[in-house]
Picture 1 (tube, rainbow, N blue to C red):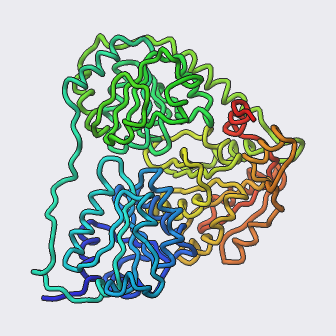
Picture 2 (cartoon, one colour; picture 1 turned 30 degrees about the vertical axis):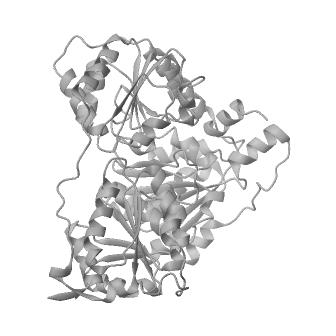
Picture 3 (cartoon, rainbow, N blue to C red; picture 1 turned 60 degrees about the horizontal axis):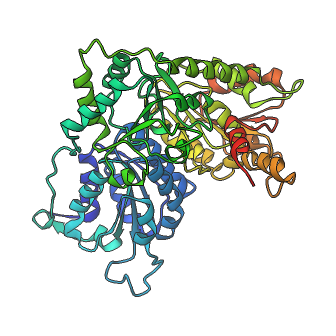
Length: 552
């Protein structure tokens, strides 16, 4: 029996229990879209391709399987920023772009661009399918690559003739792949790590973006057996809940002053975390020159970037934690009494005390006025997204993370424009959970019209915009260092009216005294919406750290 390439793509996605597509329609994917629609796939049609990839990114992280984004040829160019963020966040995504007939490529075919070359730097794998017989095997390879080791996005360009041509089942090459394989550490290396831990007085674990496969119970048993603190990078947030006495939140010391206690550590174990600029590459002021560093990562490139480690182990982070847990389990004499807890606890008290003391002048609104009120109305099952802005970074170090893949922020890339679509993708994956996006007025402008996507698809996402009318992180630096704000001021905009114009809930808050009533009403509304809050410009902990450490 023969069927089209598009039917084989549908078969493959169904076999992987993937049922949702994030897309902007276009000529070179119309056949594929029609087939998928007739097979019952759910389409979320967005207003911009970057936004569609951001939605697939969030959906894939939460569902623990690749999110699917799909575009025509010029749309592929718009998708590159979304792929860039997914690559940095290590999120599983398969991006499919159509193209002109494969026999015409290289001759100036309609809308022809180098889609493979454009996607290569920001994906784990970028391929063009020229032979329809290889269609299923190429999809399988993309799936496996997206989910293995350090996860990340992959890209496939599938020409129109590959979608429409008919192929007999006997003609199709199929890879019968087993379970995704993991890199195992050598037993001696796990023992060496334990020896370092036994001899250390103040060890600290840092979970990074590459730690997606860690088992919560195993990691919890390790830190409890050692009585050892833990902090974690964005994509690892909630692996061990912040309510645990040994968990101290976000590892980025710029946004979370609590994490600066690690300078007192004599041993740091990096689990899927790069030894990057957020850790001053292993030196001062973040890490003492006398501190020993152990790094575990499945990627040799990441290990090779680190110029200072006492032990580097190439291994799946989850498997390493499993093996270390086996060695530690049942050993009652490993529990330590680290002095570093007093530093962590003091930093935490001082940080929360400072945040709780911040309030707007008179009846004006400070970012922390908003976050304190919102925290009182959070549901038990919630997903919080903090998109880069002073408004959001106040919240990023204030709200705890209790569950994995329910707390997201920019990460080290610092990209903006992703927050609103990310929240929409998260809500598609979490129909029965509260999803709130915190974003600034500058960042919101990139993909604000995705509120229309939420309305058309009945996606109940809540977007809170801190509207201080400046590009805050840069604005405050300009005033600090140059006393001259250049291209960093914005007009006050009634974003709530934009929401109302497309059928969403919209409201404006200008007075501190109105926050409790208006926030409660906004969060209880059954439908998507924007709450526009006029806030005072104020440098967040992240911005203040930058100003304290940068020199010109």
